[in-house]
Structures are given as structure tokens and as C-alpha cells.
Image 1 (tube, helix red, strand yellow):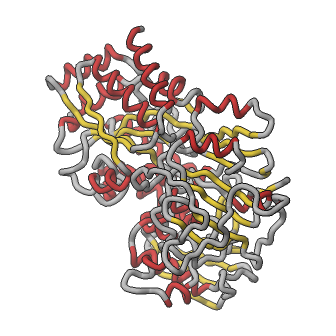
Image 2 (cartoon, one colour):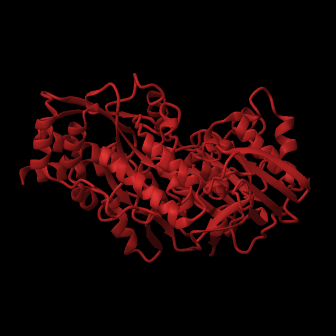
Image 3 (cartoon, helix red, strand yellow):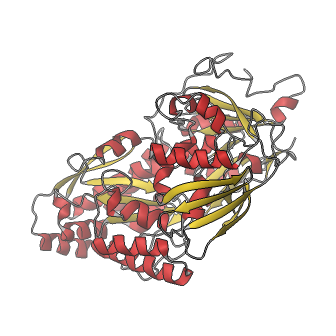
Length: 551
């Protein structure tokens, strides 16, 4: 019992610290928040903030403020180039400015820029009809040539969302509103992946192509057709958008301007929300949820997610290559304490590699439970003595900080010394790019880009992504690879599920990861906002077009 009280006190201390509960796909180093100047300078001459009074009351009657939407964020985007929209910090600022062919609505694929689409019997060609009347922010019509250009550009650059559309081969344009996409093989998740392929203005990007397919220009500029135009970005401080009046979807009560304000600590987000300087925050300290819930001016929204917090084991060239050691670590962790004390009940233990809310998850996976006696026995079977390991986790992330401390304490009880090292996401990705620098254990979230098991089983556990993707521990099992790739080509949903479940059970049996918890997503916002809905297909972002502002 003494151990539990010690850990609980550590968790409470960590929760009071300047940490956030978020972990985007790509995170720059934590930044110290600086006060906004009276009139902020934009990055480069091309970007100038449209307004120097994004917060407070803009005008004597405060009408401009009432029509604005200001969102507190804890991490700035690495770029505004939609090719990197597999990164949640990028996805969030890309969503207002760009459209995709398809999108998810209440868990189902619906049309965006596409008014109709059809996959042939072989699953290798997709015919698409574009909606009429959609234009880019410079007034140019969105055409099939722009779709082809976008897909070809992603294939050439081969980063970011390219990993989601690996079988893409080519696009044939029939006329301005009709095109055919050809795949190298049948690939069931391709339509889902199109929800992360944001269509760019080909003429505009081509005019700023440079030597990097326009990446430098798009890093701070907008070439989209979305409901909002990017007006300006002040690095580490704020990104500002305004309505595009000719948006094909029209407007009905949405904010006239949208601002993302970047803040480095939860205390600042809390005070800004209470002071009406921001309207919505996603990093409020769990200890403050109840006070906001009891305040009639605010809404506390808790939503189930497809996000799991994992610890990936280094599978080659380390002590963790020993399966008994990996199993011992998995049985040592107190999963229930994680859910109760770290997540404050806003989440649950997982039953395998996939979250229980995702289709095809295997409920009968042999998921380890907290069992110190079994952990000690497994460690003895490993034959290892005086084990010391190093684990990395992301800075500025409360759940990770607390989970790392809890795991360290649990492992100490079975005789394993765990050293902790907090790093940034770029450091995490860089270290995982070589087996020599991959840590013994690496704690990271997986953010499925779409609600399909392929987004986890394939992206995180297929051996093709070792050292060049998100297979963070270097896990390799040829049978898992074959099952994942066979499932991609299957057209029968039941067959696909069977294949993914077989793969999931193998991954769990191999103990490639410690599956820590499946957290809920908690958003606190001012009640004047209507229409906010958590979107599991775009975790940790806000669909600003869905939100309407009142009073």
C-alpha cells in the first residue's frame, strides 16, 4: 500500500506541473510562451496577420470578438504543407484551408470535393466525379488536374501521407470533373486514406515549385479550397484564418475568423478560457474538469477515441530482445491505476493492440494484466540479472510523464532499473530511424489517420516501416506482414476482420508493445459555441467549419 500512495503523490505532483496531455504525430520542442505584441509580425513578407486584435473585444460592441473562434493549442505546426497532414499539428491547421475528395462524417465516408466515386471489381481503379462550383482561394476552379497533381506530388515527395497511399500508381484525367485513379494492387483502405489527402491548387504550387516540390512555399502559405483562408502565422504564437466568401459549402453561423493560439502550459489555457480570451481548449488539467463542468458557461466534452498509448520494445540488439523480459515488463505495469489515477477515469485499459472501439479488434487477445508475481517469475525465466533499461517519452505530455513514473516504480519492484529520458517528437523519430539509436523502450501514442485497423496493424507493425516509418521498435514478423497486406487486398469485410484479428493476436503474443491505455479526448469550450464534435478520424484537431458561434 505504501507504494500506491507514493505513486499517487507523484502523479498529483506531475499533474500540477506545466505539462499537457497531448502528443501530436509530430511535435517540435516545447516552447516558452511569449506575450503577443500589439501587432504581431508574420513569418515572411507573404504572411501578414489580418488583425492585431484576435482576442479581447474587437470594437466598442465586441461584435467582432463574438464572431471569432479562438482555440488554445499547446504545440505549433511544423509546416502548413498538407503533404505532412499525417501529423496532427499540421492536420489541424490544414483542415480549415483545404478540402479532401472524401471525408468521414459520423464514422462513415462521405463526399467532399467528390460528388461520386466507384471502385471496380478488382479494386484497382477508382472513378471519381468532382462537384461543380468548388474554387481555390484565388478563384481558380478545382479540377481533376489538381487532384492528379496532388496525388503525383505526394508520390514524388514520398513523406507524410504518402505512407497511407503506397499503392497509388497514376491518375488519368477525362475532363475537368472526371478522373480515374489507378492502384498497383487492390487496396481496401485507399478510400479511407483519401480523407487525409488535401487537394492543392496545382497552378499556384507550380508557380512556387522551387527544388522541393513547393514544400518551402507551402510551409507558410495556403493553396487550398477550404472554408477559411490562411491570413498569417506568427511562429510559436498564433495562426489566423478568415472566411473564404466563395466557399462551395456556404456559411451559416460559422466564425468569420479562426485563431489558433499556442500556449505552453495548462495554467495559461485555463486562465485564458476563463477570461474569454479563448473559446476552446483541449489541454485543461484533469483536476480542473469538474470546476468547468459545474460552471454553466462551459461545456466539458469527453469522447471515446481510437488512440492508444504504447511502449514499443526495441526488438533487436538490446536486452529487450529477450521475450521473457518483455513479458515481465508487460505484467509489471498497473493498468488499472493508469486509468483511474492518471486518466481520472477518462479512458480505459485495452484488450490488445487495437482499441475496442475500432472495427475488427480482437477481444480475445491475451492481453497482460497487472501481476507482479508473474512478472518476477518471467524475469527469472529470462536469465537476465541486474537489468537496466532506458525509456524515452515525449516532453510536455502529462499522461506520458505520469505513466513513465508509474512504470519505473512498478519495474523497481521486480528488480528492473528503468531510466527515463524526456525528448521531443523530432528526436524520437530521428532515434527510431536507426536501430543503433532506437531506445530500449519508447513511449508514444498512435493516432490512426482513419478508423480502420490498417492504420495501426500496417502502419505500426509491418516490417517495411522499420527505421523509416512508425514501426518504432523494429518489430518484424513475416506472418503479420503477410496478414496485413492480404487484408488490404480483401474486399469482403468479414475476411478483412479475420485477417486483422489474426495479426493482432500474433503481435500481442510476441509482446511487441506494452499497451497502456485507450484514453478519451476531453475538450472544454465556451457554451456560446454550438456544433463541436470530436472527430476520431482527425484526432487532436478541431473541425472549425462544423462550429457555429452565438452571442
